[in-house]
Amino acid sequence: MTALILNLRPAIELTDEQFFQLCQNNRDLRLERTAKGELIIMPPTGWESGNRNAKLTARLELWTEADGTGLAFDSSTGFKLPNGANRSPDASWVRKERIEALNPDPAKFLPMAPDFVVELRSATDSLETLQQKMQEYIDCGVRLGWLIDPQNQQVEIYRIGQKVEVLESPLSLSGEDVLPGFVLDLKGILS
Image (cartoon, rainbow, N blue to C red; front, side):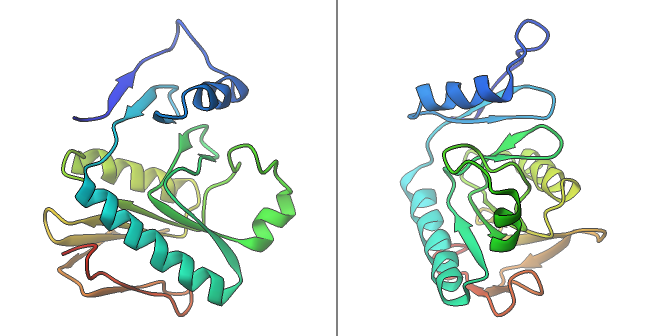
């Protein structure tokens, strides 16, 4: 089952608060909103993708706890991007100082683009749609992004101001200067 996209405009123009309340009232649904105001309803993933994402999030969180400079987030975390979209990356990370400077309401979506995002392609995800989403993240200020594609045994690395780098069957990924010292072991995630 693929994601369902509802074109609400011009009939319905959801405010940020209305979209947030819609998500709260439908907690069993995974909802995102594009910069154009389209509502995206994403189905749950299969067990294999769920297991891969659990490993990904756990490894990022373990490093985050040891590092102490930022906060890691799972796929249920909503971000209000600068272009107006509401997105929920499969895994993400934000420097603590950025969050502290905003002092955002912890019960609401985080009103910023993360420093780092990961999208993990499931069997039903369109690669082109995920590539567009990754580019949107970069355009909104994400400094490093990984699109992990188990179907093709590839990882696409997105960086601000650079061409997308494609790696074939890597064993690990470096957090580079965005997450210094973080190395993601891809065992059980990519393969």
